[in-house]
Image (cartoon, rainbow, N blue to C red; front, side, top):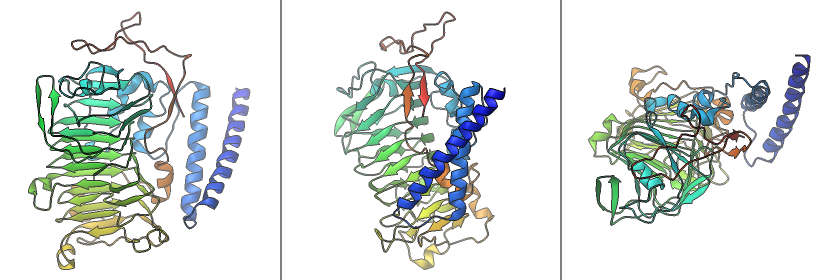
Length: 456
């Protein structure tokens, strides 16, 4: 016990020194003005606490409190056996998409083949073959891979695409379409370089394929769907949007994503005239909006948007949060950092893209507990009072943390980096077959173990 306590003190001291010096170096070299002092102190404290607790947890070999304030990551990331408990992730959704279960109740499907040579008759072992199946599936990847889709990836209901443990890129081709389905989790992918494709036959289920017109080139397109969770992905540089939610889609959460180098980032709502989007409820939480972004972070039409604890760290070319056709926007605990040197006329966070002031003055847009730096500001409208009932439908279950904690809460945004530890388990899997797409059991008790990875 004495040795352990000594080790604990030494670890805490070393981590304290390393992170304080690295953090000071970062703030000194930052191109933006000095951050709020409370924010700096809070982030240093949280980083030190999280790092020491994770190290101590590994030494003890038992669970430990690993609280970051990020409700999703706090739910699963401190489980040292997370790889064999992958489906625990399905219990960690928050916000309007909190009931999403994805492929929780199904078998595992291991993607072994990055090719996409035939959109009508996809080969077993490919991502396209996995996502069209009718039964629930939890889809994982055997190894690192770059998947260049020839046509949009049309998914079927009750699927999880889980990129943890591999470095998976969907790049330089078509991307993901979630259309008229439910219960979808997209986690841990790099999606970039998406471009318009279409005017082709594409399979959507094992028994159906059909003609598809031209797709816009969104990274993730959510169309007429519900119970969707887009979490811990790295998204950039696509032809149209990074995440679009349209045509009466609802119960959607977009969280922990790292987004950069893109103009029109997130569009919620099909058009100003489409009344079906009045039911739309979307939560945008814990995301990092980084370098080179123009607008729509998000842009909301008609529905209800809860924008909570996101980090807008590098300014915005035109605006950050926009809307049209009388949406309700509830902005809580976000960190807005304008960049007046790069974007001298874009300090305003908000923009109404339809109607004049006589119309939009009645739209319910509020800022509650947001942090504004470098001259950023938010123009509120509509109902007054922080607890106004007008925002009830735009308030999901996400409890906003203090905006001074946002940099720490979002510090792991994007696809997580994992490394293999071959000393733990061996990853054994037969090729997926058309009629038998489950992992083959290799344990004496009929269970299997996936290869162990260590989070960094």
